[in-house]
Length: 234
Ligand code: URA
Image 1 (cartoon, rainbow, N blue to C red):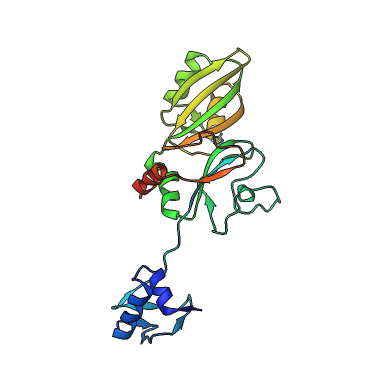
Image 2: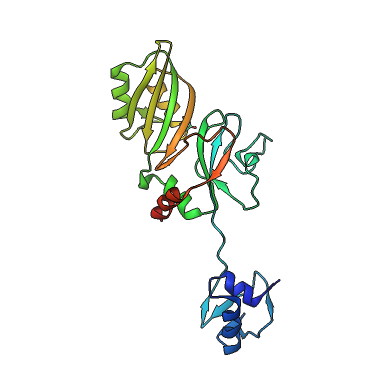
């Protein structure tokens, strides 16, 4: 139970005092009945102001986690494995945006903003996801070009990607891959399609969000510039 003036303030109707005035003026109804100053409401009650329904705004959180290897990107795991939520000690109910494999590390956004999660993960928005992969052996220019142009993964060609060779000692090669899709195990399968094997995979950026120096297993709230980017997605 919550006092009606606080409930209305939480809905962004005005200050508690202003809300008391609205109640006294008779423009507020609870379940169709004129409200009175000092009354309380419950979550299931239907509250209207001048005939329009109002609902409390939930505070939106955006958290960047450096997901380590050895955990799953779900809120709960029925096999009892460690989840990314084990690294977040916030009371708000957040959920991970998209998935990284159990053995993949790197940037993972967690939020309670479904709209932003949808924009970042829906293929129609073509948000760039940047990965650094360590693959076994060398990658030839022909393989690199194939990866860029598109390879067959699960019976369907991948969309054009940016593939940059970072360094190689002949035994292992570090490659940066930027893709705009988010298909299951996509980067690993792309390399498989050209006969190479990913030994280690890390996501370093999603859109304009960059992992930077955030330590493995640590999280932080997005900064102002990143929040501008997030707001621009809506
Ligand atoms: N591609 C993969 O293969 N694995 C991931 O976790 C993310 C992208």
